[in-house]
Structures are given as C-alpha cells and as structure tokens.
Image 1: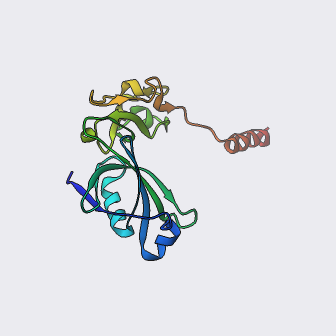
Image 2: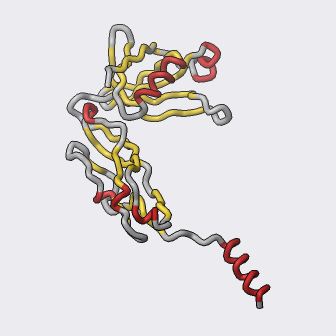
Image 3: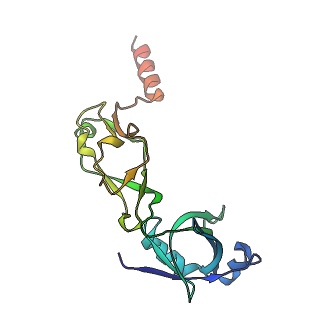
Length: 199
C-alpha cells in the first residue's frame, strides 16, 4: 500500500470535539510507549477519505510539519445520533516493536454442509494478534469448504496464519460452525395445530 500521510496540528485543551466541529476539524490524541500523549486536530474530510483506505490495520504517518510520527488508528468515538466521527485515538508505532491489534476475518469458499441445509454460525469476526507494523494485513481468510457436514467446526487453530503473526485469540475458540437448521416455534405450533385439526 502507498505511504499514507495525514497533516495534523497540535491542539489545545480548549479545542475539543465540540469546538472543532463548526470548523470542520476533528480532534484526536496520539499515545505511545516512549512519549507523552499529544493532542492533535485534523481536517475532518481528509481524515475520513484516508481512513476509508487505511482502516485500523495500516500505518499512517502524522505530519506535524517539522516532526512525523507513524501511528495506527486505535479507537474511534462517534456522535451517538449522527454516527459522525467525534474523536480519534492514535497509537504510535516503533519499527521493530510489535503492535497489538485485531484483524478482520473474511469468509470464502462454499460449504457442502450449507448446501445440505446447515446454518453457518460465525462466532468470531476478527483475530487478536501481535505483529510488526510492516506485516499488517487487511484481513485473514477462512475457507468454508472445510465444513462438509452438519456439526463440523472451524477453530482458530485450524486457520492458516503466517508465522509473522502471534495469535492472541484462544486457539480452541470456535470461528464458525455448521449447525442444524433451527425450527421456529411458530412453525412447530402451526404443525401441531394442523395435526389436531385433522384429528
């Protein structure tokens, strides 16, 4: 991926989310193991466009003018009603040091169990991992073709994950299971009523 650079400015305590909103600016803060937190502000639309590309799993370079810091988006606070971004937490990354993050799972392939009527229940949407910033990826794939019959399960330990990643999620945790189709209570009641009527 191309190098993503976001121009930011240091902000004051008075320049909170509410004060910056009319200016179409967004408040943020940068945390790091080797530095004091830095309060920042940035253009709202510029950040939004970049975040659509970077998500939470790609390094962004914050450009302060004289200084630059490589970061990941760590947390996003949204306005309760509109859902607009309100505040961004960044975490500084250091080359050679592993980052702790969640990488989404993408389900691919066809399941023979599903074709036979099984319901595929997804228990996990992402994996918690540690890795170097340069090794971050958009997602991990889960091959559903491993679910051949009802009752088959794919666990974290079944996934093929590159050794560059240290998986923190429990290896025995269920990712997806081919479950029996659930009979709705309403359908059962209808069936019972039909039998009673016939009798």
